[in-house]
Image (tube, rainbow, N blue to C red; front, side, top):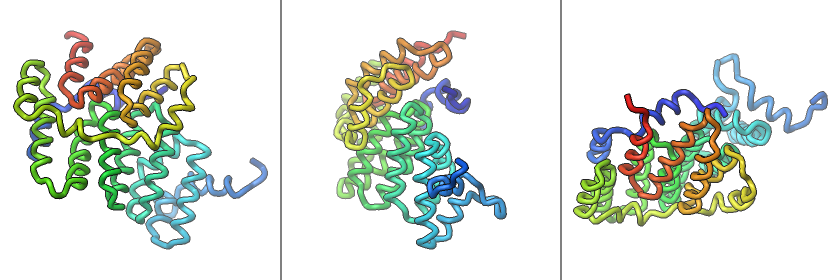
Amino acid sequence: MMVPHSYLKRTKACLPPLGVLRIFVHRSARCNLSALLLLCALLPLRASGQDAIVAQLNSRDGENVGRAVDQIQAALAANPQQAVDQLNNAWMAALLRAGQNQAVEEFATKGTLAVAADTWRIEQLQKHRITALLAEHKPQEALHAAKGLFNVCGMGFTKDALPILVDCLKAANPNDPSLIPKFKLQVLANAQEDPAERQRLLAKYDGNSVMESILADPGPYGEAIAKRANITDYRGLYGTGNLLLMSGRIKEAHDVFMKVYQIAPPGELKYASEGIAKLIKAEEGGLGKANQFVMSIRPKS
């Protein structure tokens, strides 16, 4: 499996520094319909340099928009990885602009299941899904999805996942203005790498009560997890672990990621270590202990 260089750099860099968190505190020859749909989905619109599906979605014409959605469905069925990359690069944003929020939810879930081992792809898919849920005035569903994203995201994406979580928490609790400041203080307290300081600040700010009160939604992935019960290879297990994290099934994810780390091929050790780090993040509901782990395995200069 090829992991993008940018993702490896992000993993190596690990968590954003506390300064960033402080800012956060303050802020075939036979042609058939499926083949035609797939061809349309993958061919660019050369006349304007714009993706054909994006052009159809931007037209705001109901017939064109419906055709674009059908083409995305065909692309996901034919080449899920390529289609997910297209979704993350352009199609999801165009779908959102066209008000196709339910399609965004559907494609985010299907895409996540199709590339379950690829955390960097899942992060973007789930970000778009949460945007769609908020646009549909489903703040509680968005909050559950945001907790799942926090659980599964790589350490470098936490700087994006935490503000998303705040937005959803705010939307789901409009009548409790004290909740967001309390949550931000608890996040900052739990981000301390020194265990004694972390415990001192958590005791001061009522522990990690807000994060612990937010539940992930196991619904979208439960059936897929059950079907993966007999998967034992490295990449397959990594995908199962990711789905368990998004579902809030942290104890089960723990066993899976420990196995992933044990069987990781030599070229996958960094990515397997990232799996352990984000597992700790999910178990603790915070960043400090996870960052301790990353620092402990970083080569000494």
